[in-house]
View (cartoon, rainbow, N blue to C red):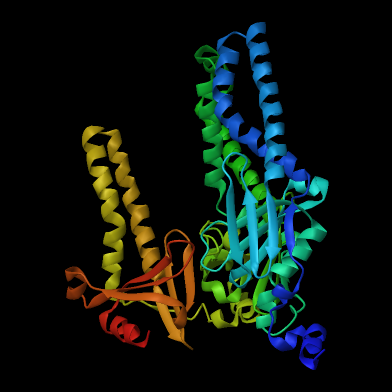
Amino acid sequence: MSSEPREFLERPEAFGKPTAEREPPLLDRHLHPVGMLLDALGTIRQWIGIAAFPSLAALFGGGLRPGTLVLIGFFAVLLVVGAAVWGVLSWRATTYSVAGDTFTLRRGVVQKSERSLRLERIQSVDTVQGVIQRLFGVVELRIETAGGGSEPDVRLPALSRETAEALRERLTRVHRETGGGEEPEREVLRTLGVRELLVAGATSGQVGVAASLLAGATQFVQQVLPETLAARLFEAILPRDAGTAVLYVAALLVFAWLLAIGGTFLAYYGFTLSRSGDHLHIRRGLLNRYEATIPLARIQAIRVVEGVLRQPFGLAYLRVDSAGYGAEEGTSTTLYPLLPVKEVPGLLEAAAPEFAAPVQEVGPVPRRALRRYLIRAVVPVLLLAAPLSYFFYPWGMLALLLVLPAAVLGWLRFRAAGWNYASERLTVRFRNLARTTVVVPRRRLQSRTVSQTPFQRRLHLASLEVQVASGSTGAGFSVLDMDADDALKLLARL
């Protein structure tokens, strides 16, 4: 035997063969058997939403007759049995394989589908563990590829933790080898304590969302229950005088506030931000545990968001705009839930140095732009108040009371607006309700535009808008009514 074949057998890496092609293939592997249960529960959840309204209508409308109860029970048993059968068939039809440099997922009971991903395109492999998965000791594996959309490219809902870790290690090995070896150890950058977590919930600004959910639940009960029963129920609980009404509103707001704190606590419990090499890792969640990996190369912009309740205390949260890593608001894009604004540059220096800009050093727009900010805020309110005052006089004129808050909001937006450009980083600041500061490295910008209306031209003003790749559609940021000369100079530098 010649020396070359012997050397190939002993040291195949010397011949440039990728590790993925040297490893034995994984062919037609099934999910953990818990996948049957998860598929069955998913089917029940899908159909129960469709059947809930007619079932409740039949139950209350039929006066709780035995025949109605038997019919509803029969359909409930049929749904459970059908979901169980579907779960088994779906589990048997779902397999995954890793052969060479390709990952393949096959699934489908009636309509077969097959999806293949090349390993070098895989950017991150995350794990999620819901309540049912925690109960049985399995995890869900989510695979993201370069250029993916707002949802993971592949979900494997039930794998043992050992299998998930081994599969994750194999799927990401190509990137580790091309990046220079084994994955570095994770360095914990910051963890969120219980006290900070409670403050984050109390200042999250989600009270309105919680209150709207309660209002929606009230409307649902009113629609589902028979009219006479609903009337009696609301007559029993509704206040009979102004003092009681005020107490009810206060109690509702307190309950909504506690609900917002509870939701934040469940979502961000145990929040840990760590880094290994060129990847950031996030762990969070009390009931549902999430472990996410964000490649630094995919981060396009970082937002520092100071909510209305947080800004007076110098607090903010960090949010990531990442190419193809999801456009969902809230927890899926949260880099860190709560920290003092003055500590943001330090955390960014450790987590993502390319974005470590002095976020508090932002120059304002010129004073002559104040009039435009006030007009932009007040005119929509006047356009709304005019028809209300005309058609619902005199009560409609109460809408004019909104003019003052709108003017204050316009003034606050003027105070917040600003920009800075240093060290190849653009920083822009603006306000909707929350004050937001965005840091974008120049090389991450997808487009840059300066526009000027005739009204701006009279005041020698212009607006700058930049866009980055984020989610499936991109994200844009703008500074309104800058000095026109500054806008053109900045455009040239960008």
